[in-house]
Image 1 (cartoon, helix red, strand yellow):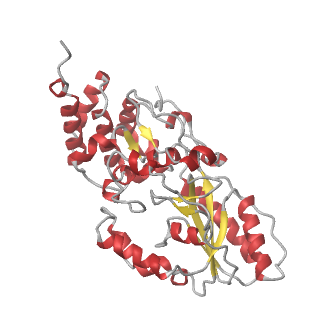
Image 2: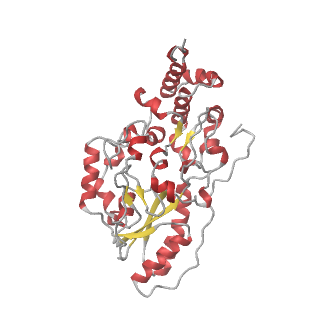
Image 3: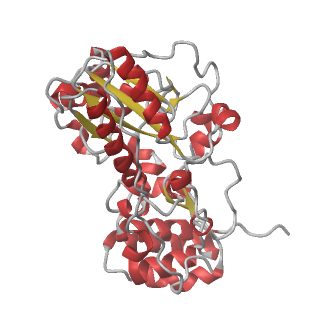
Length: 378
């Protein structure tokens, strides 16, 4: 069985990246090119430079989205929205932002129908990508300081109030997809975003004006919880990724069947995207999926999370959901399968001390009840 207690705990520490220190650049244009080359040497691809402040329409778009209440329970997004569009509020004297991508494996195989948990492709590795990003960006910051003596930098990877995707768009890392993801015309959308704010003005690379979604609506049509009220707009409160990772407590019964067997994140809108099907890049070596974490047994997940959620998840993306959120997700997934081996775990989860776990488990029991099944044909 996957994730057995006897398995040794894998290393969840990122490798120590290193770069040969450069000679000082003769000018800022050369410095920008050298910095992007160093980023690629660290495994970052794509990479591009954005100006330190976003156009005014990005702040307007953010405020409209928040005013419409589409952020779900992520109310921290409404705090200091102006700070999210201006890098100078994070680093004094900011002159540019280097935005970079770090690829993870695209989801291409069909999701398993048996009693297994569905895990987003980016979260199938043994190490949290934030830790990999932090180590490499720190190396890149050191390279920058040697390249431009006296210069400063601040790294970004979900660590500050900052609109990474919007800055990445301005840096030419892709175009806006109708599912609100950033899509690179030769790499698809399966890459994480991070950045480095620097205190020198560098030539911006600019948005990519040539590519786009055209008339395609596959990502909108495939979403089982109708999380896209219209193209280019996401209602986070209905998004499976939000529900299984960020949401705390129970969520609406009307969404649970659509969540299906997802226990952490969702790839549906990316998996059907033609750009990913054609150009999806291979995962960075440190972020490669682990076989036992691709789509593990729901029974194994229940046993492991109940016994020691920290051992199962600490140092990986799964830790973000928290133990009770993860068990709630497992209970919901169990409710969308018919394996009788899950009856006993659901009975235990229905008596769980956490109200959300217990409620979702009771829903799952009712969902699996024979009374819900249609009569067989005569």
